Amino acid sequence: MVVYVHAAQLAVEQTGSSGLFPRELPLAGQAGVDIFFVISGVIIARTVVGLTWQEFAWKRFRRIIPFYFLVCIFALLIVARSGVAITGRDLLASFFLWPATDTMTLPLLPVAWTLCYEMLFYAAATLVLADRRWLFPVLGLFVAAMALRQHGAVFQFLGNPLIIEFLFGVALAHAPAFRHVRWGIPLGAALIIGAGFFDLAPLGNALEYLRGDEAFLRVAVYGLPAALIVWGVMQFNGRASAWTRQGDASYSLYLTHSLFMPMFFVVWTLIPLPTDLMIVISMAAAAFFGWRIHLAIEVPVLNALKGQRKLIPSRSGGAD
Image (cartoon, rainbow, N blue to C red; front, side):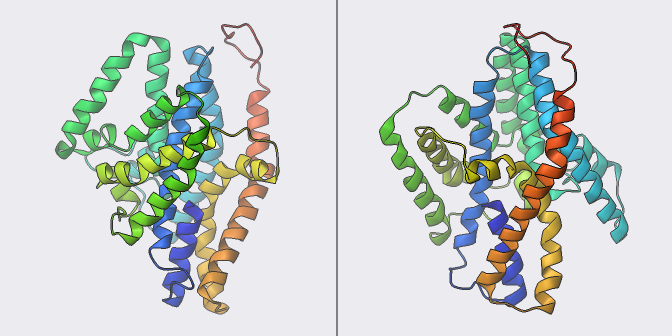
């Protein structure tokens, strides 16, 4: 969905036409982030069981950070080569995923704004896992920061209402199986698509999303339907397939597709095509390259880190 948004923006900018589909349709792709946040809440709540806080922190670190650093270094080189000045704020936001200083700053890889919130969620989960008594102070900090958002970037970051979507996922992880909730998939999809046509879709750029501009609207318009979709999908038993293999590469696709998109802008300038064909080709190429990078770089990095001897025994005494 996120790749579709960026591919459609690129094609429309190039041709000035939205093609066969109305301009409001690509707006629905933004909700891919909200679905991602809800799914993250589900996964963390379910996989944390039986882990020490050290194990949990290490598992999340090795899954997210090493490959991200490699992509981020590549983005850093691109920005540096373009002649744009790189500040300490940029490096802090990019390599520490902390965007809040005296002002809110995007990472050099703009799509990584979502990872800033992922890591914030992981940090909160680690604290609670270390000591359950941290639960209410963490929630209290979130509520207080949300109330003080107009007083600076740190409060905007810690109190972004989008964090509620992670909590939707945590709640769904403990929700009972209910077959009829499968209808939440088409219902949620219809609500997300309809938001664009009824002028309810939150509009903005990555920096505005990072600051949490119109975030309450976004939670209502995209977050609740995203929760319906995820809850509906949870009623199915999946099987390994080409779709799940592509799903394994989704993190690689997410991080790398925005680096490839500018190349297509040059291609479409030289080879004009209809808008819809541009979108399809851009998405297919991004998915292919994301999958290949996943196999060639991400998987070996993960395997190398998994192969390290585990220093902290699990509560069950089993292997990592």
